[in-house]
Length: 320
Image (cartoon, helix red, strand yellow):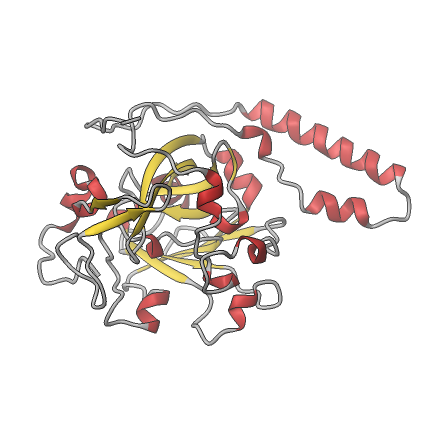
């Protein structure tokens, strides 16, 4: 089925779950947890199970943003999870099994740098503060493959607003977890942890999306649980997974792939069919579901929303 891309993508008023519902649900879970502890006296298993529980699972599926469509068939979840790179767990494409080692609870988030006040949140508390919605986004990998995914989450702009950055903060630096004992890939020579960055203007663009779910449920581990970024107009490596830290800074961050190979991977990484990777063309992309080759679009087809971010930057390597 062909989905028509609609223009003028204003974010609708989002539906927030009332605080009373959150508090009531939290109390129910707390009481249930105490009952478990009482029923298995002397055992540590209930504590461990409770610590690993996703207390926000009942928030999915979230309302879909009806003003948006991908123009592509949605990639099946099994295809997505079995053709997915997560370098923390290995360099191959089929790391879903290895990624199951990722412990997503407890998960603490830190917001620091040039902000009015340093903040700390558990992932569940942060998710409860944000009105979730589902968005259908295209995803374009720098290697030349593509998919379309129903992500659930909230605008990155909402987190920026919560952080209250100082006026001289120009960039947002994001950092993933660091735990080589848990993540086998972090025992490699790569410069861990994974780091990415955006300008404040990019971070507050309406398309920048913090993902907490996919396919109508909490986001899978191999997809970057419990919190990842998705930037549909940039190559996929910019969409950092399993984030633990947001820092507001005044200097452009040096990202993970810039450190490894600066001649091939830059800060901006905007999709452009006319600017080839040093080792391959970017003119076409391969849909991982059908194998069909389709023409790549400038900004992955999202130029209407983001092209204005890059005025006056003609001397910058915007497409690497």
